[in-house]
Length: 186
Image 1: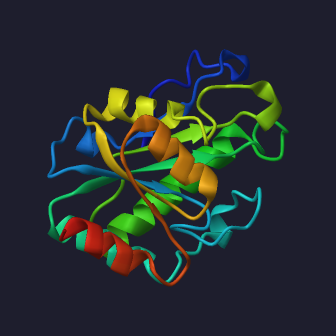
Image 2 (image 1 turned 120 degrees about the vertical axis):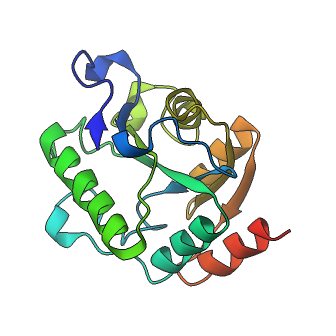
């Protein structure tokens, strides 16, 4: 994973941070699925981006295996306002996402095409913080594919997908695999 826009990026720019998987850059697939990060793919530990505490939820690996079998690729869209409040650094975010992607490769053989991250607080009024659709716009811009589905555990994830005009799935910890399978096989 490498930063695409961190060299000249500034928090006051109101734009998302993008990490791109260089090995999968520009890769085309059956379609692009976007997952929220905390509470959807990994255990939500609040504003903690400690890579040593990274833990996938029980349905995560089977769901990523499923989408890989059907030829889909995936991205991650996440709000991380702790960065704007100096709870963690840009380097800690990079280490966390690098570790997460390595674990996806080790367990599934497929990592995300990219990770789009909103580092702004809700008070900053940016267009990338979910429920706004800015992260999905950035994902399309950097992945060269229009997302087809937004999967998340919060209403803000669903609102972002609806504002962007794509299908959405609201998940709970134990039902993501079945709901994504139903959507893929419809």
